[in-house]
Length: 257
Length: 255
Image 1 (cartoon, rainbow over the protein chains, first blue to last red):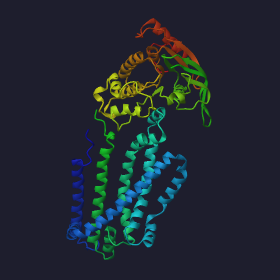
Image 2 (cartoon, chains in turn brown, blue):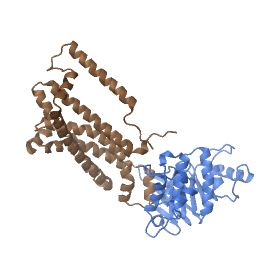
Image 3 (cartoon, chains in turn blue, cyan):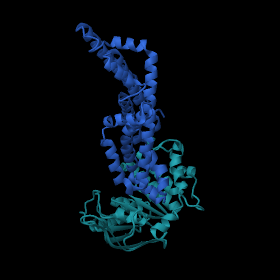
Image 4 (tube, rainbow over the protein chains, first blue to last red):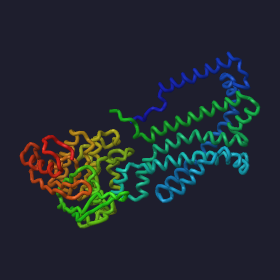
């Protein structure tokens, strides 16, 4: 059985043509209008900056990506564990979800400077912010997935006298896999945003700090180079998750009659 | 397995409460194929769900071989098959059948091996396929294999072939009849299909609109196979149609 292709050559080609056209127009616009570099640098200038500072950007990307991934794993683990507890002990759902919505409604941009103040300029506050930002979508999606198990299958497991735990392991958990991937595809870009926003509030490294320094110095080629990297990493993460999903949730392959 | 229903009533909570069964009484002797027929929403499925232990008995009594549904279910003496084949899409055909064994209580053996059960329903060649690769009819065969494998004395079947096309449905009901004749479990078969009930069952129980009461208990003493054109079949069909308040038109009509 062949999982559905994520990197469809035709889609890649059309996306490539659109991006290339966008960059060409941008380049032409900047040159024709003689745009000052501190307002809008040409993409060729941004890419040149990127290649001239590969080591700096590689280190910054590794740090930000590391913070984002560790935060994502923590947010995912906490969301998954809590969703599992709520399904196995349904009486707790009302209270816990109220608290979760409270966390979700609290603006992380306001919390980030506080955490930096309390935890310092290291990676810890970045990981905490990222975990807090990814926790809610993971909790809601996985909880929905665990609860929306096919009623006919639940009847069958009840007729088999399967325990609540057996029903969870053999039925609810695999049934929720599509929701887990939906959560991951929402949370992965959020994790990157969380790490960058946390770095803006004070950090010793990372793409967020690079962007902040570039902005305060009006060095826009540096700023855009970091934006380009973030966009590329976000897209790569999303496509990787889609690729993984096609293999893990193989039964959702469209039927070919 | 002998099935005994006495003064069974069931009401679903709500505003207003919804009575599904009202003082329903009938018995099914061991090995009999009984079809239960009645208007949509009359409580046929509720009756089956009560027998399967999926709903608690509120009033009256329902005994399966002298046991409560929970006791009979705990000993896996009851098999349940619904309109949806209820298959796990991430497990292969063989693994879907094998999963049923995982929940057998200690000391209980399967009646057939997974491969034997698949062979009985003609799915040996698809043992390593996944359910989404199978047609609707094959998926129901797989559900049937799961039922065959367990050594259940009572098969509770809630319109298992209702979602299938007419040809597949016809073929599967014939196959089911063959399997029932070989194994002889007690069958309680809920259907909307009057002709199907008469072709398959030893007896047809007709229920009234909700709350379900018994309005006709019709023995079908005809040798199988039962051609629909025979006068005896037509006479029983007329009685069923009259009990269900349908015009005596020759065309088939859903109850």
